Length: 106
Image 1: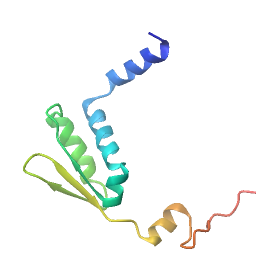
Image 2: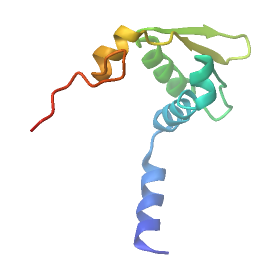
Image 3: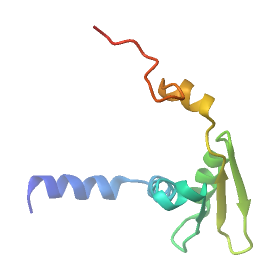
């Protein structure tokens, strides 16, 4: 086994359960389908421990603009609003007409 493969295997094995769950949630939230619908359902797997699930749910609950709906099945539906034009202008530095608000660095 090559050095990179061994390092990658060590990295995977050292990730905590909450890290793995957080990555899974992030992958679901980052999907194009979730962004188009502004919602995603996070399924709780049998391998998700109570402590890890609670930690990630607490982190999500602390996120502004995120609505969480808990289902009887243990799944959670995350919903968010699309950012307004003003929010995008402030965040990205782009005016509504698509021109950059940031001066050139030179």
